[in-house]
Length: 352
Length: 267
Image 1 (cartoon, each protein chain N blue to C red):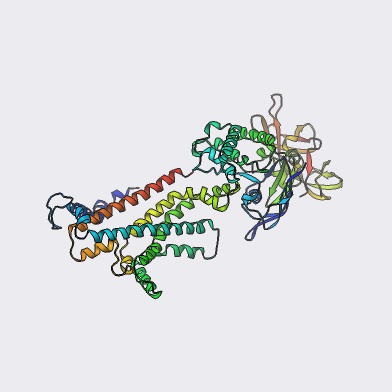
Image 2: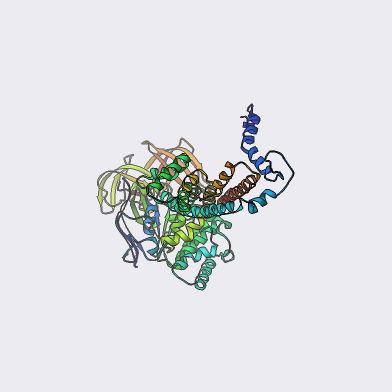
């Protein structure tokens, strides 16, 4: 697979604050790649640097091998879907979609035909002559997509494009976006703070925090094998326990749990014997007759499909367990002492 | 909380203010239709003073002055609007630069400086650089004092336009100029038109500065009217004043509605 975008040691500073600390990333051709992180983590800044709305202070951005970091936005073969769509309010839907083609010098007949095809693709042919203000949020979103895809960019950049939609529409658009990406064969770089969005659509995800990439991997990688506390905590729910690492051999470590029990578990790279954090997903723990941890139940939260059991360990730490809401389960009552059994391989030792 | 209407003396105060503002205007308008050579006694309705403005002994003077006023207003408003568009782009889209607040103050200072001071200073300036007073000096002076009036509605409009529109245009392969001409300028247009109309009416209306820099033999409508009044107020002055008032009201109303349409089309 060839590389669509290669970012090398990208640094962006605003005055004395650094928004991007030497970011390096490779995004493969035809990949749905997501930049995920909380607000202020630098994900949008990085996207704007790729689009050309911001200039890097240092580093390179290579698009299929060519450094584009110093080019104006109109000379970069990438297009953007903006968070608030930024459809031109004084142009019709068709004129909006044809705008990029017009700027590229395509004749009226050709660009009208192509823009019409793009509108067909997003099921909005009937709205070609409307003004953007006459469309619903979901329709505007699809026009923005059609407009950005019409000039056949090599890479499509999407800046939280679903955040302005309501929940149902957002879920439908996720599927539509993913399908569109697979059909068009264009590399998508998608920015979001919504982990569910990231997990459901992406081929790979870069988790960002404080201007740094914390981890890059598939949804399964970052959920099941987080490298550090930030990633483990940001993606999904987890229990973080401070443990003592006795020995490390390769990717496996022997650790002592707070209660004194010893277990063997997978470890992230760079773990050394000493104090470290162990991440245990709440759905990979079960209540059993005996287990590695002892806890007292505080309360049981009913979530519909699931039940959340809030406990604290006998050594003091808060600990959540999540289980499917099955009729046959006999539930403990608040105040009960329970044993918690950690599924084989479910506990993961973190680097920091 | 009580509305302002319930404060003691509100009604009397409001009526007094409105009367002082508008009764003189109404008197002028009504007496412009007076069929009498006296300006104080009513002699029945007539259009004669309007006819007098166009055909009477003073007609050639008024026509020449009106032509000067209108051409100067159009040219000055056009130049001031162009400068104001450029200034608002620099101020609002130009990012941070040294002396930005000083620049803002400089653009708007003409609104605060007493006009008579500007008039004297402008005259001294023109004579220092040995520019003969006349049509050209009036035009230059008008361009200058029209800029802040054109700037205010244009800058207000631009402030409300998100910069993602221009970014979207640039992203879709538009050059900086194309992004301005095809996207930003159309979005700014209501503010630009509004600024032009305001500048036009301010120029058309100006007396003090014009009177200082116009030079001998050169008249605009306000200075021509003032010249006539010095020889005694005749009813034709009321007719011509009423016409100017009508034009002013028309333009200000137009400017207001253009701005309102702009607000409705925004996002």
